[in-house]
Image (tube, rainbow, N blue to C red):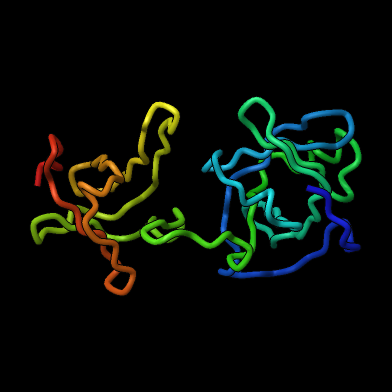
Length: 189
């Protein structure tokens, strides 16, 4: 993707909760200031559809960067950011969070959800709360894998396959996901 927008190389903008974390900046890729981006969902096409990302240190404000170019290379994303011209510039970005505006995320199909929408929801089975989703594991789609919901419960982590046969309902109003054991899967409730 090539961006033709004229913007400062990086400008301070506080976006609060309308920014969604996609991943982290990895080590520099080249001497030209390109950076490796490790997204939580490496199958995401979001970076190809946005002109701007935000980078944020753990204790800092997000800073906007114009994406000059982004490509996939051997399982990672490689990005050229406006104002990031040298390997030292890229090294200074290592470890920062990669964020995008919520409104810049592509629209989803019915019964599809972004991870940020799911993480934190309670998981219920047989009228019992099992715990809250703390993270999601992505498995290899080329091997017909599915995402796995990791639920923090009083007795430890519970792994729940994110498939229609198990996940019966996602209700954002009540903050719950209703699951149903079956097809060889039982969350031991």
